[in-house]
Image 1: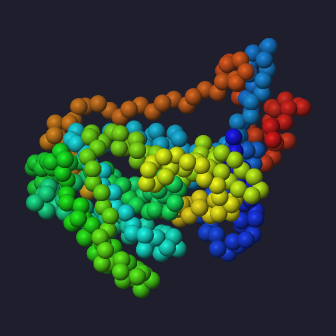
Image 2: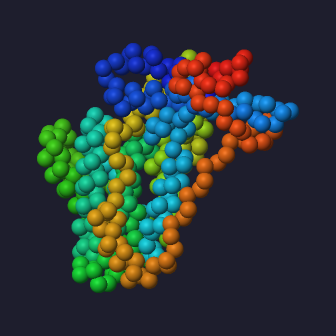
Image 3: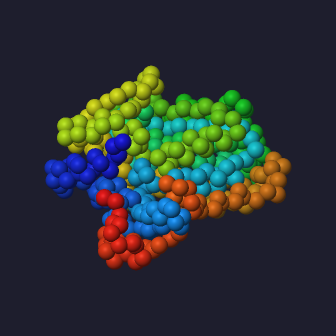
Length: 369
């Protein structure tokens, strides 16, 4: 089956030539890493099957570990999920989603680091401000926020999901103030404060004049829905956090003229096949590559590292301290022979892009192309 790396290897040189000077360093790095992920360029290890009747040699190449690579980060997703599940409070949870208006998306695309940071800061401040209001919760809440930049079809659609417990810790830290099971905060109020704070921060960043004034007179989209204990919502967020806009499993065909891939219709949710010119497909993927070092998951309120003692107080009040430790991390899986199933024995290390220098590799057996 074709992969994203095949698209980059086949059409990446032409894309880089045509858009020279307009491609961001983070995008060039993503293209290069994905092209070479788990290939001889990255180096790796050679393993030998100890079964005398088999003797099969297996070459295992290193991953690029780029966060935009569709073949990497599965183990990181599982580790993050376990860690976040340990932090869940034993109360109902809500998923609050704050979406950037369409009028601001061109600005976000050209000033990613600034606008994404403002999106986080303005939406989180709006939710936390209203949570402290006695009409709703009247306390400090906990929030996990994850940035997502695509919609079901893979189009550019920046928004932030927040997982929020239904309640907060009172200002004097003496009691837990629960929210309703079906109602957290009025979304129209979050929308208004979110819009106002975003405008102020954009003005402070010197980008306000680049935006149409009409965007400040419309309602901004904020959704809030109950998600039970929050466990399944964390699984949902983990997929966003460690998944890329177009997974390898969705690419159907690659040739000189088109890339064919599966996507979901944003309105109906039904899967459909879509065909794009290769350079358009690459551009569509690269718009979701984040700036170097940008944190797409952020923690607020009781989940802030500085508020760890207060989170412990909340858990105590809720009688949630069960005394259980964190889930043990799974051991590293042993490599097995794909032919006979025996446990493989390490032969030696393969130096990146220098296989002739790899030690202990049987003569006459080169790594597969």
